Image: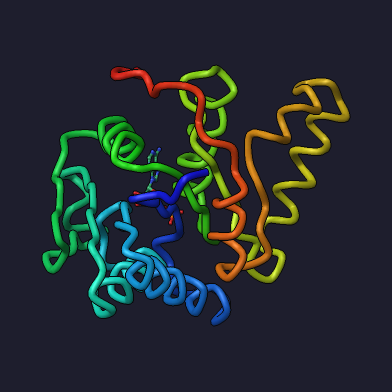
Length: 194
Ligand code: AMP
């Protein structure tokens, strides 16, 4: 794939995960800044989200956050970003983040992270987009998830070729290599998805 201009990072609002997860969030922020790739994320100051955004900003990178008004307090909307887009709903947030991004990277996270990545995987399955989705498997965090997806395929609830909807990379250091090898998206993203 030709070099990307923006990367959406989905990750947790918790900072109580393993130190290796926190370090991965920081490394990704620094790497994005060094490569001149804009970070698109959920706009909060807390957890891995805040760590990644702060690292990118500190390293001179461009960061765009998208946060629904009702979460602006809860997830502490980051006022130091290049741009903070305050929107009206979770659905609009996900759609804005989708349209602003050339690809998606998934760091460790919780239910919200799972919701976000599955929406992107299922939209891709439906042919609504063809942007790369990379699960960053820091210390094997996503292994149980990929095992579940294999089980879903083994039980015939998804086709084996659905494995091509996402790519698993071992760590942040392998992310950009995987992106460079990802095929150029063939599908023009639909203007209105929902
Ligand atoms: P978590 O992984 O649960 O810490 O959440 C990560 C991010 O996902 C946070 O910014 C949450 O606001 C967001 N999130 C949680 N639930 C949803 C949802 N249903 N749709 C979109 N984003 C969500």
